[in-house]
Each structure stands twice: as structure tokens, then as C-alpha cells.
Figure 1 (cartoon, rainbow, N blue to C red):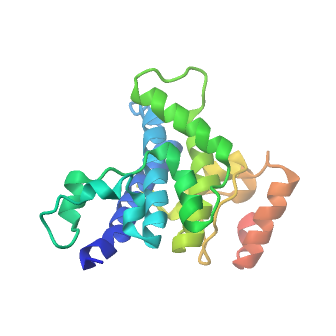
Figure 2: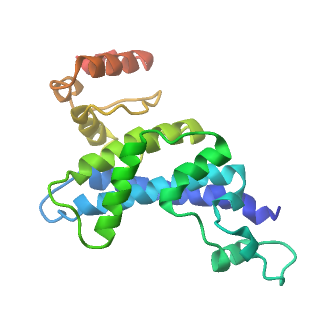
Length: 227
């Protein structure tokens, strides 16, 4: 294999992290003037999901993300290179990636119903007819933390909460949104928050969710954050 092709998974991964950074920000933060973020977060979330799935698949072999590898050969070069892939390659559509993931890695995508809901919302928003009466921020967070987060934790040892655009603080406000929503997330070993009170955000949470978060805080030796 051409050495340049081996770097494709890392190229895709870096782009995926950028998309996730924007998706987290647009799904969590909202102020007057950025109302459009409610729709943009769906597009960024879908983009992040698509790229992370392709990065996982490409680790098995970079060419597995392409629809028809036979069309990549134009008989003009000895080895397939990145430039040829850019010019002639067509990757699998977003909706097909769960099947490609399973076929290439044996892994099933978590929460298929959420994947389908976000896929439909993404398509609607792209065609300028976003459905009314739908909480797109909640849908985006559900997709990020029930699909993307467990996948990238296992595949790349990454925690989704660590990627956001608020450089003034850590992931405090991302975590606050997840606690209010009752969404589980991968907790890094050095977890810490200083801008929020976790106990306050957990007031409406279910008993099972509180039990889960307590177990995670105990695991990382940060039980004092719940007081």
C-alpha cells in the first residue's frame, strides 16, 4: 500500500474532531443572535458522526470507505495515491455507514433509532425545510453521547466532552447540559468541573442516572463534586 494512504484514517479523525468541537458548542450554547445554531448543530453532529465512522472503517483499510474502488484505476499511475482518491473517489453515503461499520469491523452502531432521527433531520435542514416542534439541540446531544462518544472512546480513547469551543472554561457547561438531559458520557480519569454545581444540575435526574454518575465520580476519585 502507498504510504500516503496509511495516513488517511488520521486525516479523517482530525477533521472529525473539528466537527465534534463545533457540534458540542452549537448544541450546548445559545444566546440572542445565534438562534441558527439550533439547526447548524444537527449538520455538525451528522458531519462528525460521518467522519468518525469513516475513520474507524478506514483503520481496517483506507479503501473500505469508498463505494467503487475499481473506478479508481485510470491506468496512468503505478500506485494509487491520495490525489487520485480526491479526484476520482466517492465515499459511502452517511446512511450506509452503520452497515459498512458492521461489515468491516463486526461492530453495531449504538442507538440506531437516534441515528435515523438525526439523519432525517439533517436531510430536512439541508433542503431548507426543517421540521417544526423538534428540539434539535437535544437530538444532537443524544446522537453525540449515545453514538459518537461510546464509539470514539473504544476506538480512539477519546472523550467527547473534551471537544468544544469555549476556551475560557473546561467542559463544565457541556457536562451541565448532559446532567440536565440525563445523558451518560465517557468520564476522563482527570475529570473536574469548577463553574457548575453538579448536585444542582442533577436535581431532576432519575435515581438510576444519579447512581451511574455517583459510580463514575467514585471511579475517578471525585465524589466531592456531588456535594
